[in-house]
Image (cartoon, rainbow, N blue to C red):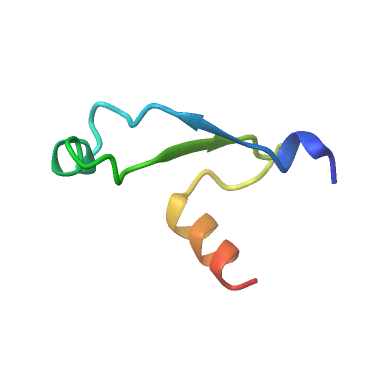
Length: 54
């Protein structure tokens, strides 16, 4: 697998995120972006299930 797909980059929380207002003062919320290979699912639930099953 290419190393391009193994790096996570810290990004700002999306403005529409529900946790933005909840965690604003205590800085407990983090957001990261990753590159996915062509053809990979963009469904966050499916990706999370895959990650936590391994």
